[in-house]
Image (cartoon, rainbow, N blue to C red; front, side, top):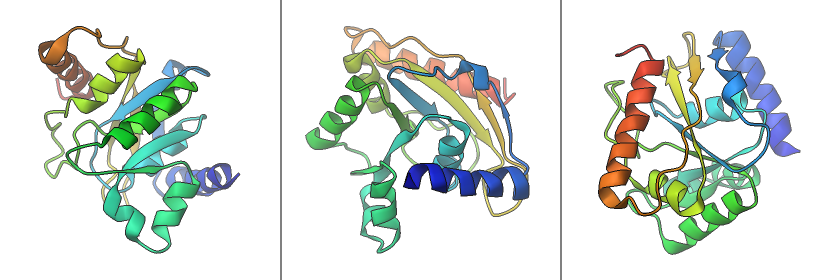
Length: 191
């Protein structure tokens, strides 16, 4: 209930004040487990991804956010859970895998941090390892214009990528991550 209410209010802000435009909505499956993997430019990005999806998105958020008095409980209430930056513990991975086994949507920013330049950073492989271990497809989402409090936000939803091969090893995951980054760049018109 809180998730739906918050999403409704934030959609008004993003579509009204920020002129958000979204393309590729037809690429979002209505059911089944899914990892939404977006580029990361600003603190607005989880809000934007949550607002463009018609399904609840559960986000991994960096642990320090949960220590902020009002924000931490809010993130938990809307389905977020903490992760240590740079390394996800076994409990975090188990929770993420359980959500995916239940057919839910997990939102992750594979770059691991916000890009200051706007260019796609080399992705961390954990997102794609989780996709391989849970046999979950990845939906690439490209965000532009999310920095600051003004300016038009644009979101491009790509076509779903089949899960990485389970036995592809680090080489396979690296190649998959490169394909994800290339797709984000393509959606943003950078290639």
